[in-house]
Image (cartoon, rainbow, N blue to C red; front, top):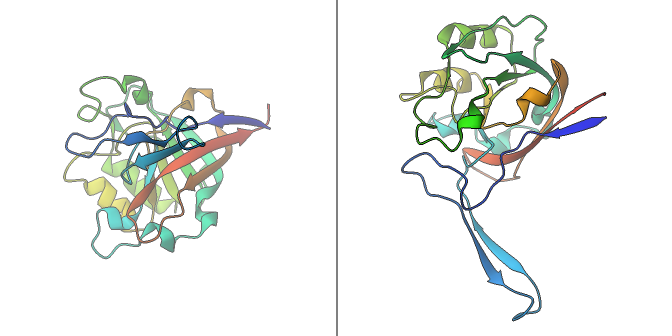
Length: 202
């Protein structure tokens, strides 16, 4: 099985939405002084490649820990929507419970000052198709599936369709593959950074 890492690296330079706290990775102990290396991490729940739980935007929405681990592992279907500003695509081949991955190519612009302002967005038409297909999770290689006031987020999350953002390396994937989305095992949170990998036969 071939394995592709779909995870944006986390470091002190990982971009964050303007106004959000940036990551801090600081050395707390060293071999030279204490006899071991130890680092302290300060990360928010939507840093880098991350998943949104309903509670992120819905006062009565489910928290991430309310979903079983099986929710995050399964068959993924990739749709290439490169070049679209308002994304729509057919969902042929997508089955109930599948994880839909949208490839826009946008995370190549991660260093751009407009990264959080000019991203492609999911159209209401596509969001309705996603709900009709009973998709389990939607993933995308942008920082967000929409922009304020985040109506697409709310529409999907209110139906327990989770949102996976800031994926990378989607150009290396076939049309279908197995995906493993591994959020931190956090209790009572609105989301989490994730390690996301794809697996498929050569």
